[in-house]
Image (cartoon, rainbow, N blue to C red; front, side):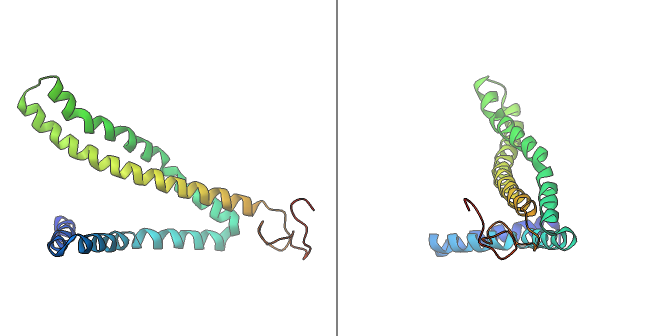
Length: 164
């Protein structure tokens, strides 16, 4: 199957679901969105499992730090989006020729796409940062038995904790 066809088929399915009403379209769009994240979720789950198997909670913290290494790409996408998105408006306000406006329409579409990707990227970065903080907190908690900070004690069976 051609790559273009792989992208066109879901779009045509969503368009077909519009014929029966808005509710069907929303449900179909949600289902398609959930379907699109299956592979990333499985990949992240496998990375967390392998890192935990190799180095316990510290391994998860290191894996989350590796996932956070995509920040530079996310920031670049966030910076490029508004620039390319506004190129058409700037060309129109400057009174440039119609041929330039045709070129900036392609940039406008790319800008809209990068804006959507950038929003998703920032949400993902927040999740990885939270995972990083929790894993490092858990890994550095003083405990001999491997229990974490929410176990109610220090691993020796006592109920010592905050303020005790």
